[in-house]
Structures are given as structure tokens and as C-alpha cells.
Image 1: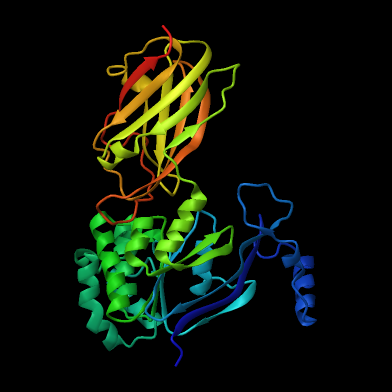
Image 2: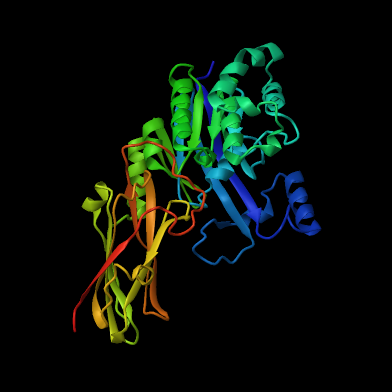
Length: 416
């Protein structure tokens, strides 16, 4: 018997922008005629790479293109890449939610997938009924499901609501029960997307621990997608890196994560050219040593052809999913910001005990005065932060400034 759990060969998925299906009857007929003659689908010839940073010339885009790899039984495989790299498309194909355009996959064993909140649940059924429904879908007998039922409920922590229709569950309760079902009903292959981040930190730790357990003790295969490199390092022995729908690298997790960070060009400082006709940001620097102690210290140098009265700097810190987790503006903190009119200088913002989760963050900065913004540097600094805790960054958008911390602002003018 082969020890390969999943084999992917030259996998590709082509989408037409703005259309459901292939778009027109003529396209459908051309594709059908090509298949009858054993020819290549004509649409695939004009498909472009899925690069969201450039404007394409074709309506056809490859979400995945010529992806090939194998996953051995008992391996925990991490799947990483930037937003739009093709990670979710790959999982949907492996879970048989959608079909590939090219290539093929071979899977040995039953698959349980957790790709988004509510996957596989019927909203009108109770939690108890959904447990049995999911077990039946996996091909398990009622007696087998019953033997695991108490473990599922105990792990999920929703015992009080187990006989309530799941449509009344919160997103966190949904994910708790869905993960417990997927992890305890003994599929040979467990596929988990970043949906786990909906849960709280304690539950996320339990999920990571459970995925380790089913791999090491039960010999089951796990595919795990996350933007949190700390979680990937902790859980996954091997990883693949996707970029613009193509497989860029495959190997040991530490090597793949290192490749990912090299490509991202993370840095704690950025310098910019000055626009002599308007106020401009010269540089942005984040103190990496202070960050290790839980202090977010940001310094912004600026220059202006005229006096700013007063100069104002604002910033927003985003997580890896481009959701804001903290923001501040010197104008909002006049009780700490001793404003001084000037045309050049440095503005510093300091936030103590920021308590960031492990993950990748990006910083955007704005420069203006009391009435107008003159310059902005979006995602000017990107960095990875590793805390002492291992859990998945919460992707839920926070109201800017919702973190219960106050930024103190200082200014050092270059002229008086």
C-alpha cells in the first residue's frame, strides 16, 4: 500500500473574471469541441498569471497553474503565501468543492475539511444532529459517531447549546463545534484553513495541539493554511509556498518560511524621496528592540517647503490579513503632543504594552497639518513579530484605535 496520502499532478484552475461558468455559449461550444478532438481548452491559452498588482489583458486568470507535489501519510503540511496566492483554491479542489481545469489529484483516505465558518453544517439542524450528519457524510456508522460524541462536545465547549439549531450559534461556537467534528471523527486527512482564527486564543491552542496529536499519535495527514508563521513553524514539518498561483518552493518548514520572508523583504525602516513642492515623509523607523519588550516606537521624519502649524502624523498598524489592529493620530492626543509649528523635524509615537499577537504586520503612515493630509506611505514597513504565545492572529477587523492603549507623541523640530 502506498504511503502517499495526496498526490497533485500539474494542477491548474482557470477563472473568467466577472462571469459565472465560461461566460458565453460560444465559449462552451469551443471548449466542448476541443475536448472531443482531444485538444487543449482554447481558454487556457489566453489565461494570465494571477498577479493582482498589475492590470491584465485577458479576462481569464489562472488561480492555480501547473502545481505538483506529494504529501506522505502522517505529515503536517503547511501551505503559505500572500493573499491571492491560490491557497484557498487549492484546498477547495482537494476538498472536492470545485473541480480543476487541468491536472489531477489522487487522494488515499477520507477527507474532513474546515475551510470557512459553517462548512458542512445545516443551519436548521441542532449541533447534535449536525455531528451525526457530518459523521454519516464521512461514511461512519451511527455507533462509531456515538462513541466519539462526548469527546466532540467536551472539546468544543458548546454542551449547553448542543440541542440548539446552529443558525443561532455565534461564529466562534460554529468553528468550535465544526473543528471538533472534523478532528474527532477520524478522517485520514484533515484540511484546515485560517478559519480557526475566529476562536479565542485558548481554543486556538487546543486546535493546534489536537492537530499535532492526530498526526503524531494517529498517523493522520493534516493540511494547514495560515498567515501566522509562528503557528506554521510550531505545527508543520513540511510546507509549500504559493505565489501568484504557482508553486514556488516545497520542503522543510524552516526553509520554506525563510524563503517567504526573503521574498517579502521585511524591514523596520523605510526611506523616501522628497517632493520639493509639498510636505513629504523622509523616513519611517520602528524600533525593533523596543518591540521585543512590548513597546511600539515609531519615528517619522518629514520635510516641508512651508511651515506646518502644527505638523501632524497618523498611522495604522495592519495584520497579515490587511485588517487594522491599532491606529493613532497626533491630533487626537493634544494633551500629550506639544505641537510646535515647523517645516522639518521628527515626530515620535510611543505605545507601551502593545501585546501584539505573533504574526506579520504592516505599517501605513500619513503626514499633514490640522486640516489636510499632504503625504501618505501605505504599507511602508512590514515586519514579523513573534510573541511567547503560539496562536493564530485574529482576522476580525478591529475598530482603529480599539486596542486599549494610548499613544504618546513627541516632536523634535529641525528649525524654530
